[in-house]
Image 1: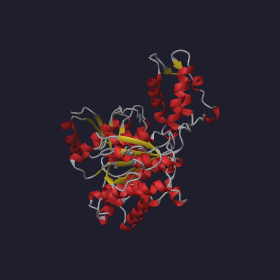
Image 2 (image 1 turned 180 degrees about the horizontal axis):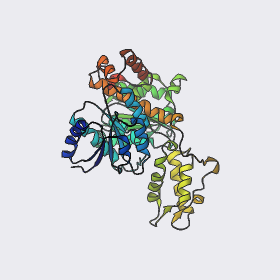
Image 3 (image 1 turned 90 degrees about the vertical axis):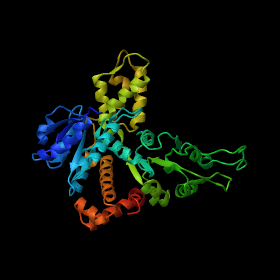
Image 4 (image 1 turned 30 degrees about the vertical axis):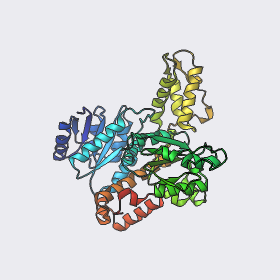
Length: 443
Protein backbone atom coordinates (compact mmCIF):
# COMPACT_ATOMS: atom_id res chain seq x y z
CA UNK A 1 0.00 0.00 0.00
CA UNK A 2 1.07 3.58 -0.64
CA UNK A 3 2.06 6.04 2.07
CA UNK A 4 1.86 9.14 -0.12
CA UNK A 5 0.86 12.37 1.64
CA UNK A 6 -2.07 14.31 0.20
CA UNK A 7 -3.32 17.80 1.02
CA UNK A 8 -7.05 18.07 0.33
CA UNK A 9 -8.35 21.63 -0.14
CA UNK A 10 -12.14 21.33 -0.02
CA UNK A 11 -14.48 23.91 1.60
CA UNK A 12 -17.37 21.44 2.04
CA UNK A 13 -16.83 18.96 4.86
CA UNK A 14 -19.20 16.32 3.48
CA UNK A 15 -17.40 16.27 0.13
CA UNK A 16 -14.04 16.15 1.87
CA UNK A 17 -15.10 13.21 4.03
CA UNK A 18 -16.30 11.24 1.00
CA UNK A 19 -12.84 11.66 -0.57
CA UNK A 20 -11.00 10.82 2.65
CA UNK A 21 -13.03 7.59 2.99
CA UNK A 22 -11.69 6.53 -0.40
CA UNK A 23 -8.07 7.55 0.18
CA UNK A 24 -7.23 6.48 3.71
CA UNK A 25 -8.13 2.77 3.27
CA UNK A 26 -5.73 2.77 0.30
CA UNK A 27 -2.90 3.99 2.52
CA UNK A 28 -2.85 7.69 1.65
CA UNK A 29 -2.15 10.16 4.48
CA UNK A 30 -4.67 12.99 4.05
CA UNK A 31 -4.63 16.49 5.55
CA UNK A 32 -7.85 18.43 5.03
CA UNK A 33 -8.10 22.23 4.94
CA UNK A 34 -11.01 24.38 3.83
CA UNK A 35 -9.39 27.45 2.26
CA UNK A 36 -6.68 28.15 -0.25
CA UNK A 37 -4.70 30.48 1.97
CA UNK A 38 -4.57 28.01 4.84
CA UNK A 39 -3.46 25.33 2.37
CA UNK A 40 -0.52 27.48 1.25
CA UNK A 41 0.68 27.61 4.87
CA UNK A 42 0.69 23.81 5.19
CA UNK A 43 3.94 21.81 4.80
CA UNK A 44 4.54 20.58 1.25
CA UNK A 45 2.95 17.27 0.31
CA UNK A 46 3.42 14.94 -2.63
CA UNK A 47 -0.04 15.69 -4.05
CA UNK A 48 -2.52 18.52 -3.52
CA UNK A 49 -6.17 17.96 -4.43
CA UNK A 50 -7.84 21.36 -4.72
CA UNK A 51 -11.48 22.21 -5.35
CA UNK A 52 -12.22 24.85 -7.97
CA UNK A 53 -14.78 26.37 -5.53
CA UNK A 54 -12.41 27.92 -2.98
CA UNK A 55 -14.10 30.54 -0.76
CA UNK A 56 -11.10 32.88 -0.40
CA UNK A 57 -9.20 32.88 -3.70
CA UNK A 58 -9.39 31.87 -7.34
CA UNK A 59 -8.17 28.33 -7.94
CA UNK A 60 -5.86 29.60 -10.70
CA UNK A 61 -4.20 31.96 -8.22
CA UNK A 62 -3.90 29.11 -5.72
CA UNK A 63 -2.20 26.81 -8.23
CA UNK A 64 0.19 29.58 -9.27
CA UNK A 65 1.19 30.24 -5.63
CA UNK A 66 1.32 26.52 -4.85
CA UNK A 67 3.82 25.86 -7.62
CA UNK A 68 6.16 28.56 -6.30
CA UNK A 69 6.62 26.79 -2.95
CA UNK A 70 9.92 24.97 -2.46
CA UNK A 71 9.75 21.19 -2.60
CA UNK A 72 6.10 21.23 -3.55
CA UNK A 73 4.42 18.25 -5.22
CA UNK A 74 1.79 18.29 -7.94
CA UNK A 75 -1.60 20.02 -7.88
CA UNK A 76 -4.76 18.32 -9.16
CA UNK A 77 -7.92 20.36 -9.68
CA UNK A 78 -11.32 18.92 -8.72
CA UNK A 79 -13.63 20.39 -11.34
CA UNK A 80 -17.43 20.67 -11.49
CA UNK A 81 -19.30 19.41 -14.57
CA UNK A 82 -20.03 22.93 -15.89
CA UNK A 83 -16.50 24.30 -15.39
CA UNK A 84 -14.81 23.08 -18.55
CA UNK A 85 -13.19 26.42 -19.39
CA UNK A 86 -12.03 26.88 -15.79
CA UNK A 87 -10.40 23.44 -15.96
CA UNK A 88 -8.38 24.50 -19.01
CA UNK A 89 -7.39 27.77 -17.32
CA UNK A 90 -6.33 25.91 -14.17
CA UNK A 91 -4.15 23.60 -16.26
CA UNK A 92 -2.66 26.69 -17.87
CA UNK A 93 -1.89 28.07 -14.41
CA UNK A 94 0.10 24.95 -13.60
CA UNK A 95 -2.20 22.17 -12.38
CA UNK A 96 -0.76 18.81 -13.39
CA UNK A 97 -4.14 17.18 -13.99
CA UNK A 98 -7.84 17.44 -13.12
CA UNK A 99 -10.67 15.27 -11.84
CA UNK A 100 -14.25 15.80 -13.01
CA UNK A 101 -17.13 15.70 -10.51
CA UNK A 102 -18.99 13.48 -9.94
CA UNK A 103 -16.32 10.79 -10.07
CA UNK A 104 -16.06 7.17 -9.04
CA UNK A 105 -13.62 5.96 -6.39
CA UNK A 106 -11.73 3.98 -9.03
CA UNK A 107 -11.25 7.13 -11.14
CA UNK A 108 -9.68 9.00 -8.23
CA UNK A 109 -7.38 6.11 -7.31
CA UNK A 110 -6.42 5.53 -10.94
CA UNK A 111 -5.46 9.19 -11.36
CA UNK A 112 -3.38 9.15 -8.18
CA UNK A 113 -1.59 5.98 -9.26
CA UNK A 114 -0.77 7.61 -12.59
CA UNK A 115 0.55 10.69 -10.77
CA UNK A 116 2.73 8.47 -8.58
CA UNK A 117 4.10 6.62 -11.61
CA UNK A 118 5.03 9.90 -13.28
CA UNK A 119 6.58 11.14 -10.04
CA UNK A 120 8.96 8.18 -9.70
CA UNK A 121 12.57 8.61 -10.85
CA UNK A 122 12.91 7.80 -14.55
CA UNK A 123 16.19 6.80 -16.17
CA UNK A 124 17.65 9.69 -18.23
CA UNK A 125 14.59 11.89 -17.64
CA UNK A 126 14.51 14.75 -15.13
CA UNK A 127 11.21 16.60 -14.74
CA UNK A 128 10.90 18.99 -11.80
CA UNK A 129 8.98 21.90 -13.34
CA UNK A 130 5.19 21.80 -13.50
CA UNK A 131 5.37 22.20 -17.29
CA UNK A 132 7.45 19.06 -17.61
CA UNK A 133 5.12 17.18 -15.27
CA UNK A 134 2.10 18.27 -17.33
CA UNK A 135 3.74 16.91 -20.48
CA UNK A 136 4.53 13.63 -18.73
CA UNK A 137 0.91 13.32 -17.62
CA UNK A 138 -0.25 13.76 -21.21
CA UNK A 139 2.44 11.34 -22.37
CA UNK A 140 1.29 8.75 -19.84
CA UNK A 141 -2.28 9.03 -21.13
CA UNK A 142 -1.04 8.73 -24.70
CA UNK A 143 0.96 5.64 -23.74
CA UNK A 144 -2.22 3.82 -22.75
CA UNK A 145 -3.68 4.18 -26.25
CA UNK A 146 -2.75 2.65 -29.60
CA UNK A 147 -2.78 5.98 -31.45
CA UNK A 148 0.19 7.54 -33.21
CA UNK A 149 2.02 10.31 -31.32
CA UNK A 150 3.77 13.37 -32.76
CA UNK A 151 6.31 15.03 -30.47
CA UNK A 152 7.28 18.60 -31.31
CA UNK A 153 9.98 20.78 -29.80
CA UNK A 154 13.24 22.53 -30.50
CA UNK A 155 16.43 20.58 -31.18
CA UNK A 156 18.06 19.22 -28.05
CA UNK A 157 14.96 19.23 -25.82
CA UNK A 158 14.96 15.45 -25.39
CA UNK A 159 12.21 14.31 -27.75
CA UNK A 160 13.62 10.78 -28.00
CA UNK A 161 13.70 10.51 -24.20
CA UNK A 162 10.00 11.45 -24.15
CA UNK A 163 9.28 8.90 -26.89
CA UNK A 164 10.99 6.19 -24.83
CA UNK A 165 8.88 7.24 -21.85
CA UNK A 166 5.69 6.71 -23.89
CA UNK A 167 6.95 3.30 -25.02
CA UNK A 168 8.01 2.20 -21.53
CA UNK A 169 4.59 3.04 -20.09
CA UNK A 170 2.61 1.42 -22.89
CA UNK A 171 1.36 -2.17 -23.23
CA UNK A 172 4.24 -2.60 -25.71
CA UNK A 173 6.92 -1.93 -23.08
CA UNK A 174 8.28 -5.48 -23.39
CA UNK A 175 8.62 -5.10 -27.16
CA UNK A 176 11.46 -3.39 -29.04
CA UNK A 177 11.96 0.38 -29.25
CA UNK A 178 13.53 1.14 -32.62
CA UNK A 179 14.76 4.71 -33.16
CA UNK A 180 15.47 6.11 -36.63
CA UNK A 181 16.92 9.56 -37.26
CA UNK A 182 15.49 10.43 -40.65
CA UNK A 183 17.88 13.39 -41.04
CA UNK A 184 21.01 11.30 -40.43
CA UNK A 185 20.37 8.73 -43.21
CA UNK A 186 20.98 9.68 -46.87
CA UNK A 187 17.74 9.99 -48.84
CA UNK A 188 18.85 7.25 -51.24
CA UNK A 189 19.20 4.80 -48.33
CA UNK A 190 16.30 5.80 -46.09
CA UNK A 191 13.67 3.77 -47.93
CA UNK A 192 15.70 0.55 -47.67
CA UNK A 193 16.57 1.26 -44.02
CA UNK A 194 12.92 1.75 -43.08
CA UNK A 195 11.22 -0.86 -45.23
CA UNK A 196 14.00 -3.38 -45.87
CA UNK A 197 15.02 -4.87 -49.24
CA UNK A 198 15.33 -8.16 -51.04
CA UNK A 199 18.45 -9.58 -52.63
CA UNK A 200 19.28 -7.82 -55.89
CA UNK A 201 16.91 -4.91 -55.30
CA UNK A 202 19.76 -2.46 -55.98
CA UNK A 203 23.51 -2.45 -56.49
CA UNK A 204 25.16 -3.86 -53.39
CA UNK A 205 22.06 -5.69 -52.11
CA UNK A 206 23.76 -9.08 -51.87
CA UNK A 207 21.21 -10.48 -49.45
CA UNK A 208 17.72 -9.73 -48.21
CA UNK A 209 17.44 -7.47 -45.20
CA UNK A 210 14.52 -6.58 -42.94
CA UNK A 211 13.83 -2.90 -42.31
CA UNK A 212 13.32 -0.91 -39.14
CA UNK A 213 9.54 -1.34 -39.31
CA UNK A 214 9.85 -5.11 -39.21
CA UNK A 215 12.41 -4.87 -36.39
CA UNK A 216 9.86 -2.90 -34.35
CA UNK A 217 7.23 -5.68 -34.57
CA UNK A 218 5.08 -5.75 -31.41
CA UNK A 219 6.92 -2.68 -30.19
CA UNK A 220 7.42 0.98 -31.09
CA UNK A 221 9.22 2.67 -33.96
CA UNK A 222 10.41 6.23 -33.32
CA UNK A 223 10.87 8.37 -36.44
CA UNK A 224 12.96 11.36 -35.38
CA UNK A 225 13.20 14.48 -37.56
CA UNK A 226 10.25 13.26 -39.65
CA UNK A 227 10.12 16.66 -41.36
CA UNK A 228 13.35 15.84 -43.23
CA UNK A 229 11.78 12.89 -45.05
CA UNK A 230 11.55 13.20 -48.84
CA UNK A 231 8.11 13.29 -50.55
CA UNK A 232 8.61 9.84 -52.13
CA UNK A 233 9.38 8.19 -48.79
CA UNK A 234 6.49 10.11 -47.19
CA UNK A 235 4.10 8.51 -49.69
CA UNK A 236 5.34 5.00 -48.85
CA UNK A 237 5.24 5.73 -45.13
CA UNK A 238 1.62 6.83 -45.46
CA UNK A 239 0.73 3.49 -47.04
CA UNK A 240 2.45 1.63 -44.19
CA UNK A 241 0.45 3.58 -41.63
CA UNK A 242 -2.83 3.06 -43.50
CA UNK A 243 -2.44 -0.62 -44.30
CA UNK A 244 -0.27 -1.66 -41.35
CA UNK A 245 1.90 -3.63 -43.71
CA UNK A 246 5.22 -3.06 -45.46
CA UNK A 247 6.74 -4.16 -48.74
CA UNK A 248 10.51 -4.51 -48.90
CA UNK A 249 12.28 -2.65 -51.68
CA UNK A 250 12.27 -4.89 -54.73
CA UNK A 251 9.46 -7.10 -53.46
CA UNK A 252 5.70 -7.16 -53.98
CA UNK A 253 5.01 -9.33 -50.96
CA UNK A 254 3.39 -7.48 -48.05
CA UNK A 255 4.52 -8.14 -44.48
CA UNK A 256 1.87 -7.47 -41.82
CA UNK A 257 2.89 -5.15 -38.97
CA UNK A 258 1.86 -4.81 -35.34
CA UNK A 259 3.65 -1.62 -34.30
CA UNK A 260 3.12 1.76 -32.68
CA UNK A 261 4.52 4.83 -34.44
CA UNK A 262 5.94 7.85 -32.60
CA UNK A 263 7.32 10.67 -34.73
CA UNK A 264 9.21 13.82 -33.72
CA UNK A 265 10.19 17.06 -35.39
CA UNK A 266 11.67 20.46 -34.62
CA UNK A 267 9.77 21.93 -37.57
CA UNK A 268 6.27 23.36 -37.73
CA UNK A 269 4.71 20.63 -39.85
CA UNK A 270 1.55 22.66 -40.42
CA UNK A 271 3.69 25.29 -42.14
CA UNK A 272 5.49 22.55 -44.03
CA UNK A 273 2.10 21.26 -45.22
CA UNK A 274 1.09 24.75 -46.36
CA UNK A 275 4.38 25.14 -48.22
CA UNK A 276 3.96 21.77 -49.94
CA UNK A 277 6.98 20.25 -48.17
CA UNK A 278 5.03 17.68 -46.14
CA UNK A 279 2.03 15.58 -47.09
CA UNK A 280 -1.17 16.71 -45.40
CA UNK A 281 -2.64 13.20 -45.22
CA UNK A 282 0.54 11.87 -43.59
CA UNK A 283 0.51 14.72 -41.08
CA UNK A 284 -3.00 13.79 -39.98
CA UNK A 285 -1.97 10.14 -39.64
CA UNK A 286 0.94 11.04 -37.37
CA UNK A 287 -0.59 13.84 -35.32
CA UNK A 288 -3.38 11.89 -33.61
CA UNK A 289 -1.99 12.65 -30.12
CA UNK A 290 0.35 15.67 -30.18
CA UNK A 291 2.89 16.30 -27.40
CA UNK A 292 4.97 19.48 -27.15
CA UNK A 293 8.24 19.33 -25.20
CA UNK A 294 8.98 22.93 -24.10
CA UNK A 295 12.50 24.37 -24.52
CA UNK A 296 14.70 24.42 -21.43
CA UNK A 297 14.40 28.19 -21.01
CA UNK A 298 10.64 27.76 -20.42
CA UNK A 299 11.10 25.19 -17.64
CA UNK A 300 13.87 26.77 -15.61
CA UNK A 301 13.12 24.61 -12.55
CA UNK A 302 14.61 21.69 -14.50
CA UNK A 303 17.98 23.34 -15.16
CA UNK A 304 19.75 22.63 -11.87
CA UNK A 305 18.40 19.08 -11.41
CA UNK A 306 19.44 18.22 -14.99
CA UNK A 307 22.85 19.79 -14.36
CA UNK A 308 23.30 17.60 -11.29
CA UNK A 309 22.22 14.58 -13.32
CA UNK A 310 25.01 15.23 -15.83
CA UNK A 311 27.55 15.89 -13.06
CA UNK A 312 26.71 12.51 -11.56
CA UNK A 313 26.93 10.92 -15.00
CA UNK A 314 30.30 12.32 -16.03
CA UNK A 315 32.31 12.96 -12.86
CA UNK A 316 35.23 10.59 -12.41
CA UNK A 317 34.29 9.41 -8.92
CA UNK A 318 35.51 12.54 -7.14
CA UNK A 319 33.14 14.86 -5.33
CA UNK A 320 31.88 17.81 -7.35
CA UNK A 321 29.33 20.54 -6.65
CA UNK A 322 28.00 23.67 -8.32
CA UNK A 323 29.07 26.93 -6.70
CA UNK A 324 26.49 29.64 -6.02
CA UNK A 325 27.68 31.77 -8.95
CA UNK A 326 27.58 28.73 -11.25
CA UNK A 327 24.00 27.93 -10.22
CA UNK A 328 23.01 31.54 -10.86
CA UNK A 329 24.68 31.58 -14.28
CA UNK A 330 23.03 28.29 -15.30
CA UNK A 331 19.58 29.64 -14.42
CA UNK A 332 20.15 32.98 -16.17
CA UNK A 333 21.47 31.52 -19.42
CA UNK A 334 19.07 31.33 -22.37
CA UNK A 335 20.03 27.75 -23.48
CA UNK A 336 19.45 28.00 -27.25
CA UNK A 337 20.80 24.45 -27.58
CA UNK A 338 18.56 23.16 -24.78
CA UNK A 339 19.50 20.01 -22.84
CA UNK A 340 22.08 18.91 -25.41
CA UNK A 341 23.95 22.18 -24.88
CA UNK A 342 23.63 21.89 -21.09
CA UNK A 343 25.17 18.42 -21.22
CA UNK A 344 28.15 19.72 -23.22
CA UNK A 345 28.61 22.66 -20.84
CA UNK A 346 28.69 20.38 -17.79
CA UNK A 347 31.14 17.99 -19.44
CA UNK A 348 33.46 20.90 -20.26
CA UNK A 349 33.14 22.39 -16.78
CA UNK A 350 34.13 19.09 -15.17
CA UNK A 351 37.36 19.24 -17.18
CA UNK A 352 38.03 22.94 -16.50
CA UNK A 353 37.27 22.99 -12.76
CA UNK A 354 39.87 23.27 -10.01
CA UNK A 355 38.85 21.50 -6.84
CA UNK A 356 35.45 20.24 -5.71
CA UNK A 357 33.37 23.11 -7.11
CA UNK A 358 32.32 24.13 -10.60
CA UNK A 359 32.37 27.93 -10.84
CA UNK A 360 30.65 30.25 -13.30
CA UNK A 361 34.02 30.77 -14.99
CA UNK A 362 34.36 27.00 -15.53
CA UNK A 363 31.03 26.98 -17.41
CA UNK A 364 32.39 29.37 -20.06
CA UNK A 365 28.91 30.58 -21.00
CA UNK A 366 28.61 33.41 -23.58
CA UNK A 367 27.97 36.62 -21.63
CA UNK A 368 25.58 37.98 -24.25
CA UNK A 369 23.13 35.14 -23.57
CA UNK A 370 23.05 35.70 -19.82
CA UNK A 371 19.97 37.53 -18.55
CA UNK A 372 18.68 38.72 -15.20
CA UNK A 373 15.32 37.08 -15.98
CA UNK A 374 15.16 33.34 -15.80
CA UNK A 375 11.98 32.63 -17.70
CA UNK A 376 9.86 34.05 -20.46
CA UNK A 377 6.54 35.41 -19.27
CA UNK A 378 3.81 32.77 -19.68
CA UNK A 379 1.73 35.07 -21.87
CA UNK A 380 4.65 35.27 -24.33
CA UNK A 381 5.60 31.61 -24.15
CA UNK A 382 4.64 29.49 -27.14
CA UNK A 383 5.36 26.34 -25.14
CA UNK A 384 2.97 27.50 -22.44
CA UNK A 385 0.24 28.23 -24.98
CA UNK A 386 0.78 24.84 -26.58
CA UNK A 387 0.42 23.05 -23.23
CA UNK A 388 -2.80 24.95 -22.52
CA UNK A 389 -4.15 23.94 -25.93
CA UNK A 390 -3.21 20.29 -25.37
CA UNK A 391 -4.85 20.30 -21.93
CA UNK A 392 -8.07 21.81 -23.29
CA UNK A 393 -8.23 19.37 -26.21
CA UNK A 394 -7.53 16.42 -23.90
CA UNK A 395 -10.35 17.57 -21.60
CA UNK A 396 -12.82 17.76 -24.51
CA UNK A 397 -11.80 14.32 -25.79
CA UNK A 398 -12.29 12.77 -22.36
CA UNK A 399 -15.76 14.29 -22.09
CA UNK A 400 -16.67 12.95 -25.53
CA UNK A 401 -15.50 9.48 -24.51
CA UNK A 402 -17.41 9.75 -21.23
CA UNK A 403 -20.65 10.52 -23.05
CA UNK A 404 -20.10 8.04 -25.86
CA UNK A 405 -19.58 10.79 -28.44
CA UNK A 406 -22.88 12.54 -27.60
CA UNK A 407 -22.13 16.17 -28.38
CA UNK A 408 -25.17 17.65 -26.61
CA UNK A 409 -24.26 16.00 -23.30
CA UNK A 410 -20.61 16.87 -23.83
CA UNK A 411 -21.41 20.53 -24.47
CA UNK A 412 -23.55 20.66 -21.31
CA UNK A 413 -20.71 19.14 -19.26
CA UNK A 414 -18.28 21.68 -20.69
CA UNK A 415 -20.67 24.55 -20.02
CA UNK A 416 -20.78 25.64 -23.67
CA UNK A 417 -23.32 25.53 -26.49
CA UNK A 418 -23.31 22.70 -29.01
CA UNK A 419 -22.42 25.26 -31.65
CA UNK A 420 -19.35 26.33 -29.65
CA UNK A 421 -18.36 22.68 -29.23
CA UNK A 422 -18.76 22.14 -32.97
CA UNK A 423 -16.36 25.03 -33.65
CA UNK A 424 -13.91 23.62 -31.10
CA UNK A 425 -14.00 20.16 -32.72
CA UNK A 426 -13.39 21.76 -36.11
CA UNK A 427 -10.39 23.59 -34.65
CA UNK A 428 -9.08 20.31 -33.25
CA UNK A 429 -9.34 18.70 -36.68
CA UNK A 430 -7.48 21.68 -38.19
CA UNK A 431 -4.76 21.09 -35.60
CA UNK A 432 -4.44 17.56 -36.98
CA UNK A 433 -6.22 15.63 -34.22
CA UNK A 434 -7.91 12.52 -35.57
CA UNK A 435 -11.16 12.51 -33.57
CA UNK A 436 -12.20 9.17 -35.05
CA UNK A 437 -9.12 7.43 -33.68
CA UNK A 438 -8.96 9.42 -30.44
CA UNK A 439 -12.53 8.77 -29.19
CA UNK A 440 -13.78 5.92 -31.37
CA UNK A 441 -16.47 5.55 -33.99
CA UNK A 442 -18.88 7.80 -32.08
CA UNK A 443 -16.90 10.86 -33.23
